[in-house]
Every structure is written in structure tokens, then in C-alpha cells.
Length: 123
Image 1: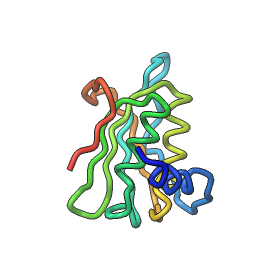
Image 2 (image 1 turned 90 degrees about the vertical axis):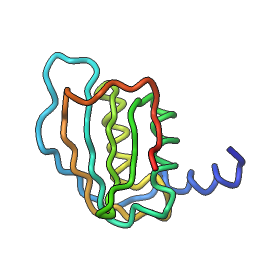
Image 3 (image 1 turned 90 degrees about the horizontal axis):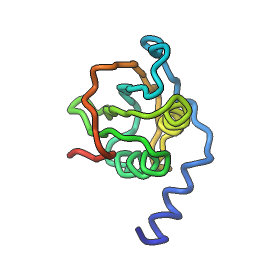
Image 4 (image 1 turned 60 degrees about the vertical axis):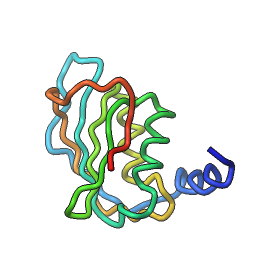
């Protein structure tokens, strides 16, 4: 990736956001790798959110998928250890793309999410 894009997306990493994180349930006990679904609402489509989410996931070693939904939200399925997922959820809350405005991230722990070998971006 060229430095123009890297500089642009790095702008979003340290900014504050008023996005709220809502946990629908608690993580499973005694499982090292956790799986989550996250539904993100706000201005999250058409602003590089999926691209920057994939970039963040790759940096953190998260496996999963990100996709736009017809209702204007973004859906994420992610797998990683607790620390990785905690950092990833915080990045989603802030909006990894500087043009995004996250209102809410609803996180659901779900052991039934299909295993992925990497993190991908769906259309």
C-alpha cells in the first residue's frame, strides 16, 4: 500500500470517537480463541471502513470477514484471543477510517462462527 493511503488511514488510529460499544452477551469461559460478531452503525459505508478494518485486523492478527449490509451498517465476524479482540473492538468503536463516524458497535460472542484462515473484505 502506498504511503498516501497509509498516512490517510493512520489519521484514524488515535482519534477519539463517541461510538458506543454494547455487549449482547459475555465471552465463553476457558476458551483461548474467542469469536465475535459485531454490527457497526453510523457513517460506516463509502468511507473506507471495510478497507481500514481489514488493515487493522491484519495488524492485530485477527481472522474473519467484514462486509457492508443493505441497511447501511457494517458486519464483522472476527476470531482472536481476548487481548487481540479487545484492541480490535476499540478500533471499530473509533472507526478505523478517519472519514467514518461510528455511533454504535453491537458485539455478540458466538462460538458458532465459521473458522477463517485470514481476514477478508466482502463486497
